[in-house]
Image (tube, rainbow, N blue to C red; front, side, top):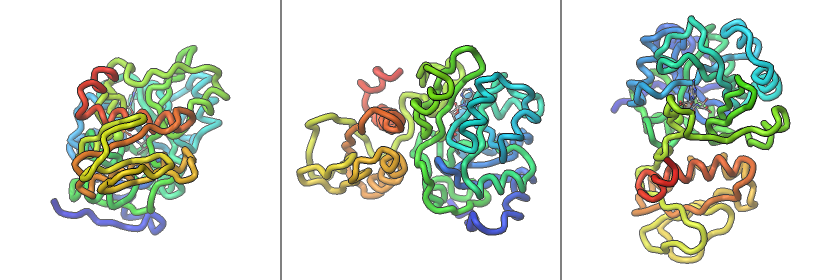
Length: 328
Ligand code: TXA
Ligand code: MG
């Protein structure tokens, strides 16, 4: 598969920004997960993202900006709710839907008139985008449908030489993707649960509707029933489930009884933020442990726990026809 060049994210970003400007792909850390970046003004560079990820062309990308002040110069005036959310939560794990400006080629948004945009809360991601001097389209840096990368090693293992350069910034802080909100109309709609809890959004906007998976066209990757999937079949249980040799267990806070081949505890202190930060890393490790099945328990369904449970349900839906029907 070959290997990409790996450079430290906290070093000089001149070369990385030049790769972006000349149409290449640079994977970089954000506070959520690693992104696979390309110049969002360059249709051919964006096309390379879809190729590298083996991502269906109907699945639009998120455009990343270095600073909230860069939004209106790019997209023009936004709705008061979008402006308020950007002012409160950027830089941060919130993606907002705006109208696609003419400078952004349609391939970036899969032909939609709307565009997803965010300012990541990561010093080196923002330095990279600023140095490139262009908006950066970046999906999570994994092959389509697979586990999101929270470490540079995950990117290298998953994408190999399909990416030109990887910036290593260590493990990401939030560990799950941004929350996606469409606040263009009168009533904000959450299109993807993510690292910014719904409760926090509602402090700014009042009640929101949570409707992941029903954004119509686009069929959002993170909103497909089967997504975020380890290679190993994953079963979501509450209460008693299958026990056994050969299986791995993903626990929220307490180690399970029984004879498991591998166990990952997301947060021994029961902290949901820590659990979210460790989720994909734990799944990557259970996958690598070559267990026959991963048995996972849901976490408390509050705050960022809702986004964790959302990821677990979708990972389980890959192989469980019942869960699949439930989610579609
Ligand atoms: O935290 C994140 O958001 C990470 C980091 C790298 O920023 N990025 C990320 O990108 O998760 P990706 O491509 O894995 O997920 C982007 C999601 C998809 O569900 C996509 O369908 C949705 O954003 N999306 C993009 N443009 C959209 C649009 N115009 N309307 C509705 N959903 C959109
Ligand atoms: Mg993704």
